[in-house]
Image 1 (tube, helix red, strand yellow):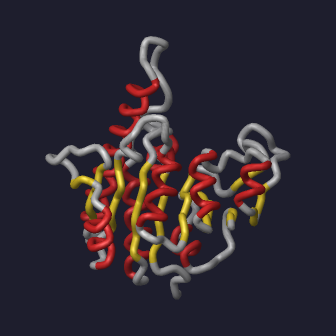
Image 2 (cartoon, helix red, strand yellow; image 1 turned 120 degrees about the vertical axis):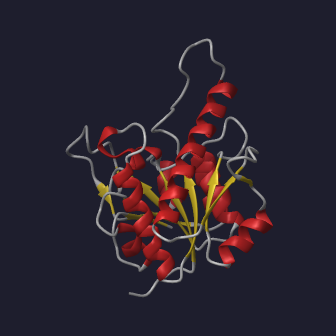
Length: 234
């Protein structure tokens, strides 16, 4: 198999790492993800990763909590996922580094663009944690920003659903699956692939997005090698 892309930004949702439990970290799903990332690296692909945190935290826990506090808790959740994925990668022989937008020197490197580029260039997998480091921005926005920062060829959007649909397929059996879309169509149809800020960053920077299900067999490798699966957003 031959890779279509040289450098990718992989966005892994927290729910995807949680598996069927939909909360916490599932060791089998984390290892499966690490093994697929190893296959990408074996193909010569440079991999940056942004993890979500929805398996630990989503939204506010009470009316007494302000948005800033809730968002910072969510950023910390992404660090937990990043650390778990880092160890899973190291366990299968892949050098991996965690760079956090929120400085925490005992557990992660700070996010520094030149360091990230150097580490990617030598073959390390770089996991970008802590979102953007600022409240009011989602991990989708962090993924779009980091993809542009590291000059990725594509964003691989690994979700717990296998594609983009017109509606939630778990609730609506008549939901239509899309094989290909433009980012403008995603925004105009309010398909909620990612938030508007992230979508705008991708559209302004001509960033391609491949949406696919993490549970599918070898989905990452198949996507990187150009197989038509999930939904391609141009």
